[in-house]
Image (cartoon, rainbow, N blue to C red):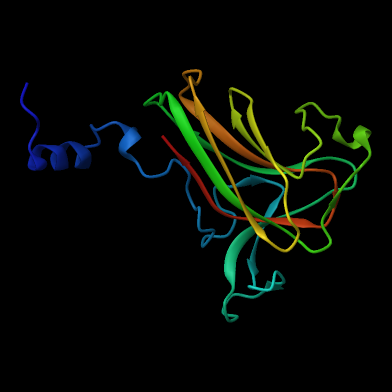
Length: 181
């Protein structure tokens, strides 16, 4: 079998006939330049200064992020649904999370009881519909990269990625979320 020429590959890509697995990222608006568009849940688009305080667009050094304010009584999350008709056998999910200086997760185990179980942790990624979870501790005032690879996924036309924060006090900011095959 001959390998396709570059021109043939370009035509197939432009015509949408190549599988989505060549796509760089399944998620939309990962730089939050369009606010919280495409993101659902408890997040709010804000600008974060290098010192970890919130600023305004145009301030020196600010970056757009999604802010999740912790609730005293229940976990909070932001999520995005995305099509995966190409049925990838694996996903690589990555995000950077920043806990505010006053971040403190609740020590009351009853605050973690909910329909969508969240373990007692600082931060969690959940891949749906498989309920694959990756937890991480956060360091207040520092960016932490949470990275996970999942294989042998249940075939699904649509999937979702959730970023959970625990009950407690403070805020968690996220940047650079990505989901790639």
